[in-house]
Length: 144
Ligand code: TYD
Image: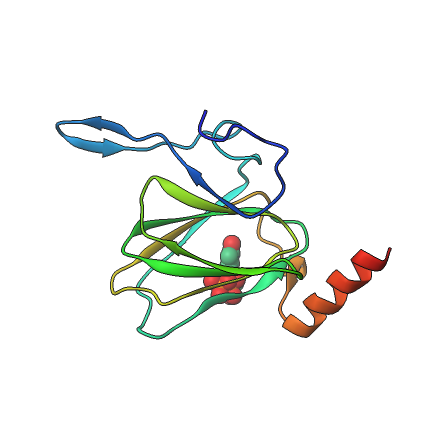
């Protein structure tokens, strides 16, 4: 199993197994195995024009795992206290992002493909789209 600590609720890179043979490499994700959440949805982002950003928002409930299936891009994350930027460029490594994390994908190389695996079905009400609202909510959570 690629992820050894399922209770670790922080943004982190998870390296998946790579099954190599002379025909090439294969990596796999099965619900309940490699990721710390059951899979409800998969989507992918592609044909991204130069200079575009994607996903400047946070989710209230949804957890995600983001992989660069092709090319490279950066994922900026902010949990309300700390910010960090991860460079994604390996097909067998993804970024786990827990709920309540601001994240933005940027600096896509030409022909990049971002695969996103999510823990919930699509729900517009799960989005926090305003960064100031996000920071306010995080401060309120901390005070509770
Ligand atoms: P959006 O979440 O704004 O994309 P990003 O976070 O990458 O900037 O979604 C863009 C559009 O796609 C928006 O009209 C909603 C739609 N969409 C779905 O229908 N289902 C989904 O699972 C997602 C992620 C988006």
